[in-house]
Length: 106
Picture (cartoon, rainbow, N blue to C red):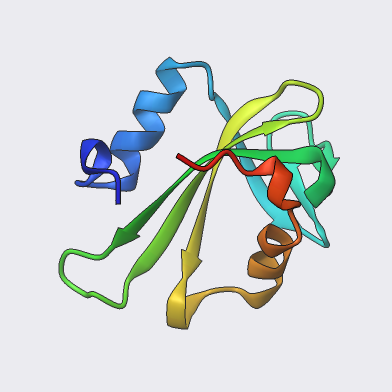
């Protein structure tokens, strides 16, 4: 986990919002949908700039991943996803389908 954003997902979301990652997305029927424009993106149209994993302070099984993303048409935003026992398998499969070349690993 990135210690700079270790406290809470909102710390990272706010920091990246200041860097221009202002859009929010939701997973819907095989696409990641921009909540502002309602445009859907396939895994091939998404680049993961960074992923930050979180473990719940009071419950270690409360797990989440914050994805910092850019789309193929230069939209920047974030997507927060549960993982572990409470993960949605369809959403997880979507992120697994993003090509490796579209992940910027640090």
